Amino acid sequence: MKIGILGGGQLARMMALAGIPLGMEFIFLDPATDACAASLGEHLHGDYNDPKLLAELVKRADVVTYEFENVPAATAEFLAKHTLVFPSAEALAVAQDRWIEKNFLSHLAIPTPAYAAVNSFIELTELMPSFGYPAMLKSRTQGYDGKGQSVLQTEHDLANAWQTLKGVPAIVEAFIPFDREVSIIAARNRSHDIVFYPLSENYHRKGMLRTAQCLPCDPLQAQAEELVSRVLNALNYVGVLALEFFVVDNQLIANEFAPRVHNSGHWTIEGAQISQFENHLRAIADLPLGATTPVGFSAMINFIGAVPDIKQILTIPNAHLHSYDKKPRKGRKIAHACVHVCTADALQQGVEKLQALADITDKS
Ligand code: AMP
Image (cartoon, rainbow, N blue to C red; front, side, top):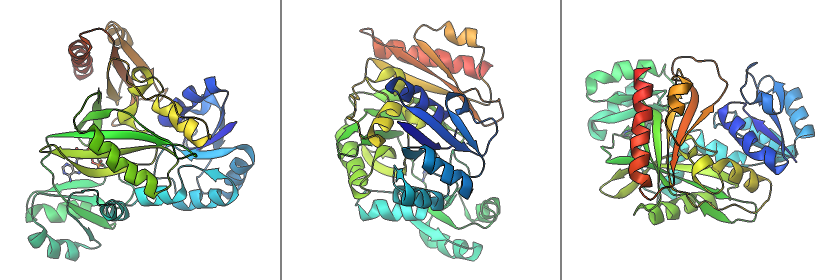
């Protein structure tokens, strides 16, 4: 079976690494000449809306998926008319617009921060006295890894924040003073079976995920599973989906969902019986889903901008390095490492080893 992927970055690369042992082949559409997944399959090089390349993808791939939610929704809609596309173009359209996404979650009675749409600076200044501070201003579309968002502490922040967004349609969200951030990753296949991974606890730095750690027995697991099931079933979803939450007083408040494999689930490569990447492929290829059971303690750290000395990382027993073969650049995710410990004191050892990795990263 040949899998077409819109995007040829690290998520596509990790999907291919999981799918090749299943006998799958891969074809990536990506405008970058140096797309890091390209060495694992064929590379259609060009724009996501190039009709010739889309026709080629339809001809060559048995099923098409995507690795990020900012591919044009029109591309997914076009492809869906000619071939199988999972997750659906509808799921993509909901996830790529924060306003539509928040309305969708609210309609499913999933708690979200209070929010409002703003289309101009005047609308923003009129809204804020009643909406209240602190708040977040976020672009409705094209935002990821903390890009396109600013904190609004007082009315003095409004002009700068609006200028940073360059006038694109936006939403204002209440700032949530969260105790922690968690995400649940789930997979639903074409036969509507659903599996859930244990929650991940996620730490961000400057809006970007820095570490994620698996929480095998979190008391919020059942609540998170119930909420993510509502999203999966409402969209008749096929594939892996990640739903991110703020936790306040042991209550889950949804931030956003990603209709794809997710950075907070990279620990599943070593840390779960079947990884999120393989389960995504199984789901879209109409195969039975695999066990999500965690194996010991796992935690992941992202290397952003540069990778510390490989030798130093590998002096930490149980550290697995995943390099994405991407050129180092400021703010770019170029590798991650996962610590994976199965001994009786797995949690303590794992946390210590994650800290050792974080120290190496901070010093380099
Ligand atoms: P996002 O791009 O919406 O996932 O935001 C990136 C990160 O910014 C989140 O993981 C949080 O750490 C922080 N953040 C986003 N929205 C809020 C909010 N409404 N309240 C508090 N922190 C937020």
